[in-house]
Length: 276
Image 1 (spheres, one colour):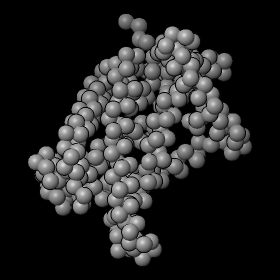
Image 2 (cartoon, one colour; image 1 turned 90 degrees about the vertical axis):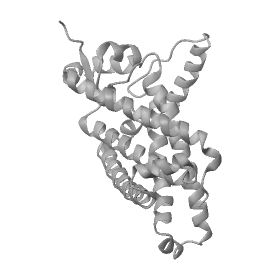
Image 3 (cartoon, rainbow, N blue to C red; image 1 turned 120 degrees about the vertical axis):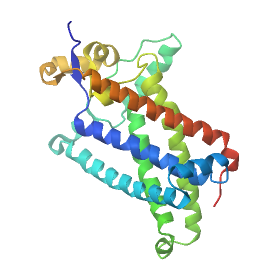
Image 4 (cartoon, one colour; image 1 turned 135 degrees about the horizontal axis):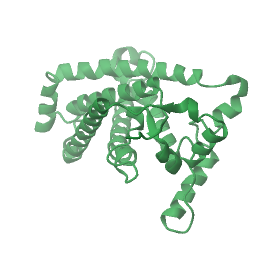
C-alpha cells in the first residue's frame, strides 16, 4: 500500500512547547477554577481532586512559575530563529509569524469568499488565524505572570507598588485567565480541530507533519514556495506510526474533553464566583 507523502511542519521542540503548554494550561485552569468557584459544590469537588484547597493553590503557584520559565525559554528560542543579517526578511518574510498587512488582506478576502463575492485567499506557511492564536497566548503570558507573582508575594510587592494595585492585579489576572480559557476552549479548539477541513483532528502539531495534498490545498503559497526553492526532498518525513497516532488522538481528545468540561461548568457556576 502506497503511503501518503508527508511534509514536515513542526520540529520536536515546537511540538514539545505545545505539549508543555497544554498540560500547564489545563492544570492552571483547573486549579484556578477550584479557587474561583470554591463556594460551589463543583468548586469544592474540583479542589478535592488536587488534595484540598491549600494543595490546589500550591500547585497553581508552582505550575505558574514553571510556565514563566517556559515562556522565558521559548522567547530565547524565538530569538535564535531570527536572522539578524537579514532582519527585515526574517521578521516580515513568508516564514515569519509576525502579522503583516498581507494577513489583513487575507482576512478580508476570506470574508468576501464566505459570502460568495470573492475568491478564497491563498495562504502561506502561517495563516492569519494561526498568527492570532500564537500572539494571543504569547502576549497574555506576561500579564498573567506579573499579576500572578504580585499575588503570590503581596507583602514584597507592596514595598514597590501601592497596596491598591493588588486589587487591580486580582481583577486583571482573573479577567485575562477567563478570556484565555474562553478563547482556547471555544475558538482555538474549533478552528484547530473541529472545522470541516480539520475534523476529526488537526494532527500537524502532534505528528509534526501534514499530507502533501493537504499542504497544497490549505497552504498553496507555501507549497509553491517549497517547490520553487527545491526543498521538498529536505522536508519529506515518514508518517507517524499507528501506535503514536492512537496515543495522540486519545491525549488530544482527553484535553479537549477536560477543557470543555471546565468551560461549561465555569459558565454554569459563574454567578457564584468567589471575590476572595
